[in-house]
Length: 497
Image (cartoon, rainbow, N blue to C red):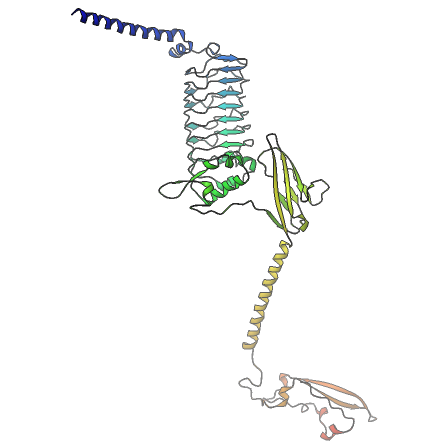
């Protein structure tokens, strides 16, 4: 009995001690931890007491903050609030303008709300990190005040809806990271059309839910923009057009295609939704044609423009002509345009060869080779030959038709035609022209000259009986004694058939 009471007493003491320790721990957290005390009572946090200050850097990571500290120094250039519990970025998170702040990091906070006026007092930002949060949409003109922003990190959120004007006003934006979200539409307006961002050179849309890519528009972009356009790990359907785009980018040594070659996948048609590497589409399933960079081909007397399509923007370009000849202003048939392209022409056969473009940039240098083949002929000459062939063919057809019309459709006046009672044995029918010479004598009786008369085969010679009037019957001066024809000196003109 005594032992039982003793054990019960010890249990009560042990329970009291546990409750006492728990109460002391809670009081310690409330009164001796400033950040937790302020959050519990919803009091503002003093930035100088809560965060770490190093010159113009304010660092507040991993402090389990649910709100942004107040009294941030006006000279702050970098503010790090990553790895906390800040869920809302309101309009009054800073009550005054931070004109020197160029870097703001609020990543890994569970942030799910952005006020449309959240960035009105930090317009000098150049880097904004909102990655690894819970953002679901980007409203219209939400980043408009950030005209100096160069880098925007929004990867690893839950963004599914993006207003077309969400990125309006970002005139200096160079890099936009939107990977690992739930975006289903490729934002073509950022790289094309009127709303495109002129300075944007990196757009990462990988790891989203995009099922359709504007392949023709992407293929038409300059190489420096293609180099920073990432769209791998999206459920796009497999097609030979998609393979053609990725294979061309890979052959051009573009980072977006070469660095993530194995992650460029597509979905094969069919209920199984099987995934396939895009670069293998030429070997299996679709059997797409191999992609090769085509040489430039042209004809004599034409003009040709060669693009120096580099992976960088704003580079210094120079050209080397075939035969390792540097391009100079004195060259008559080749000159470099303002955009760095080379115009050559009028082309001659000697213009065939390899043209080299050297591009020098801040990050790296590039060398591009363009092979030009000039055919020994002119484009207009080929068309003229083709037109001549067609003209000859049409002329032959017209001639055949006219001959057929002449043979079968014209009235028949020949003796052999039906209804004509002409004597087929009449010798006059076999002669078309008869020449007879008569002697002309003057009053003295001497022969002066011989005159020739040609009698044509004419319709008027036909009489009512259908017979042809014999030669000499109509012209009396030709008639004479038959014996006169055999007299000496009388010339007789032979019949010409």
